[in-house]
Length: 100
Image (cartoon, rainbow, N blue to C red; front, side):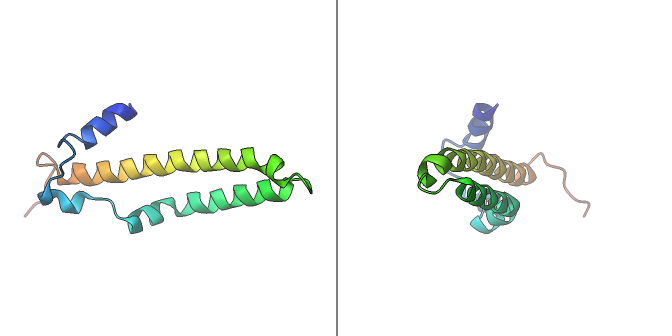
């Protein structure tokens, strides 16, 4: 499924269509879409660091922190794809148009 999404998003051969500039995702949009996930990531990292035993901070926290980052990375990529797909579908010539 992910491969199909990427193929659809890159259908223009990676050259980009200048008339579709309004279909690009901005960092501001991503920050808004990921705000809760960033908070959750910070909570998980803090919990992992605080649960580590004295003298074993790296050994006890490295894997939980890595797992939290992996989960966040996946969510971030999925949200970015969804934002881009939503914008491109809204720009589509076959998209429904509001009544004039």
